[in-house]
Amino acid sequence: MQNELLEMVNQFNANMLASAKRLGDLNMRTFEQLASKQAAVFNDCLESSAKQYEVLTTAKDYKAAMVAQGELLKGCNEKFLANMRDTAEMMTVVREELTGMVEEAVKYTNSTVEKAGKVAAKKAA
Image (cartoon, rainbow, N blue to C red; front, top):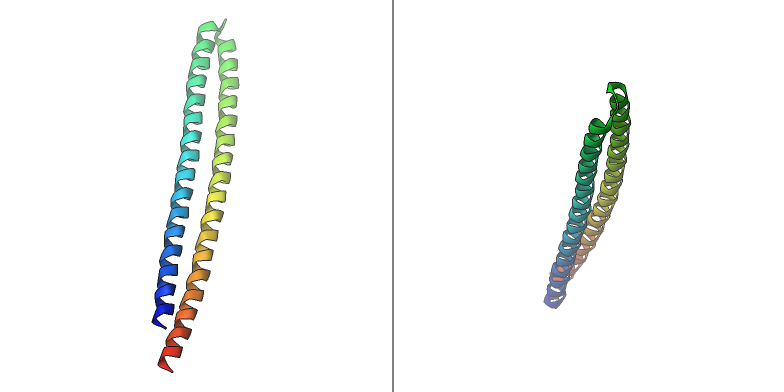
């Protein structure tokens, strides 16, 4: 019976390490995706700045500059909203994966506690 308990403890530890590795992998993937998004947003900001400079230096008059600025702002807003939607979707996927990991861990822990209770009951009998 002691061997059963030791085997259960070893299995529990192995499962914990595997869960920690999965969590670390999830964190790394999420960080990489967020960093990529941030780089894309920064790049869009630089492009917008360059376009704004171009608009201001090439506009024939004040009205043309304002119209071009408005179009540029509209494009920036669309990119910003698209980025926010993409990020929200990405975080939803991360949340679902993390929830799945927690649910698996709870199921495994419950079954392990149940087995340990049976082993302890056998030992007590």
